[in-house]
Length: 303
Image (cartoon, rainbow, N blue to C red; front, side):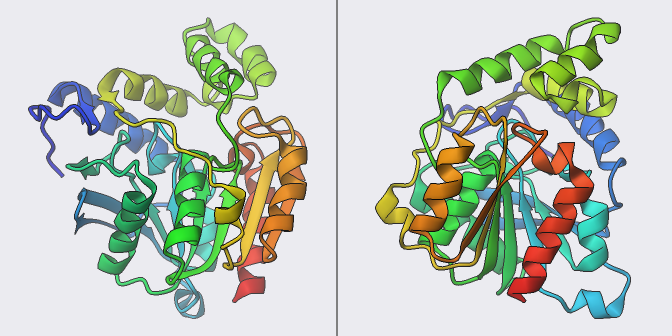
């Protein structure tokens, strides 16, 4: 889908130039190639811009009729980040991966969606345009905030929600932003040092060359214009009735996993929460096979 860098609005995300946009798309395509091949790509129009969606589908006719999964990625990246998960998930049921407007990807943002009600309206319009009336919604990091916000504000289309070390549960602290900065700086380290840094930072970006190139190119190519989302209050969390699965990295720097694994099920009766050992902010990447199995088991129990 063509995009241009000639827009002058300062409150929506944009590419710095067409050349950098094309370089980023090429880097993304190399990461997409690590996962399942998409059966279809489509653009849907919403009140906030054009949303680009990748569809992955099972070949088993019985699996095609199961409730689909919709994947919502984290901030500063695109739906290519789901490459460790698309094979397993799409073998079991239809999968849709959304490029969030306002982040680097193939969507085109025209209006801000950072306000909670606008974010919920955008996602609901996207699902409606895709013809999806009942979905298992999965979000990671900032995508987890979008999913949690959806469960609070517009749950009618949701069969379940899965939150992978999500935003939206507590205020983002300086240690998380410091980790992001140090991780980005570490992508420039000599190749011999990267495995050690990847283990220390729990950052797979450093050792997966295609992912490393995509992240570095995205930082250069795209300007995000979005404040950090406001966490949901306890009163807001208590309104959620959608079946919910929360997976927190044991060494997460985004949230306090021990506090949230007790707090969320107390506030949301339908919630199932657990801490995943041996990971920080990316359990679905660090332990892809394990997390794919856990997510599918949860969805099957809901269905």
